[in-house]
Structures are given as structure tokens and as C-alpha cells.
Length: 139
Image (cartoon, rainbow, N blue to C red):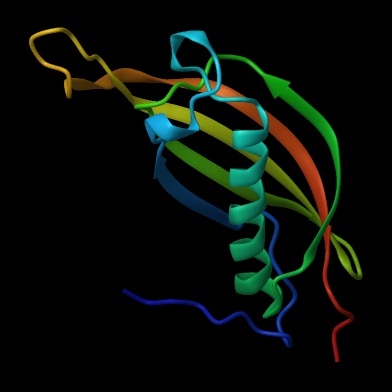
């Protein structure tokens, strides 16, 4: 596996994308139907934003704001999520990022098969957001 260490001499390119996958454990369910709270997705956005900043600027950066967050579908314990972060704008020190959480697999437990799960034919778009991060000035 090749890992980019980020470069402080190259200007980051809009269109750069970082993708993470995460299983949602049942210990994170807070509500009936094994729902997790919306903050769960926001925490995942922070994780992919951190990797984006490391890759593009060689620094973890700081999350400054969200300009739009939309919860479109439920996220449940037992889901496998794909979280994407795409760089859309590069400022002197700020970066605008578009985020999405897709559910790609979902638990399908039954009395006979408590660990059953299924891949979804079409991923469900669960959460979207636009955010801004800031990074240190370039040398």
C-alpha cells in the first residue's frame, strides 16, 4: 500500500478524494431500531477530513465549520458505511470539502441467524455535508 505523506510545496488539487469504510457496532446504537445519532456521521467526516489535510498539506488541519448538513437516511448499528471526502475549493489556508456517508451493507439479523447481514444492491445515501477546514500557512 502506498501512503502519501502530503507535500507543502504542491498546491492541493480540487477533486482529490479520500474514502474510508467503517462498521457501525451495536454498542453505538442509541435509539429504537438500533439507530445511531447524527453526530456519528459528523465524527466520521472529521476522520476523512483529517486524512485529506494530511495528504494535501502535511498537517492534520482544524475543522472550522459546516455550511450544510443533511440527514437523508437512517444509519443503524450493523451497517457498513463508506465515507467520502472530496476537496472542492483551495484557499490560501482554507479548504472546502464535500462529504457523503453511504450505507453499503446492513445487518439483517433474524432469530435463526442473529449475525446475518447483506450487501445492498444500491448504496443508500445517508448523510451529506459541506465543510471547511484550515491548515497552517505554506512555507
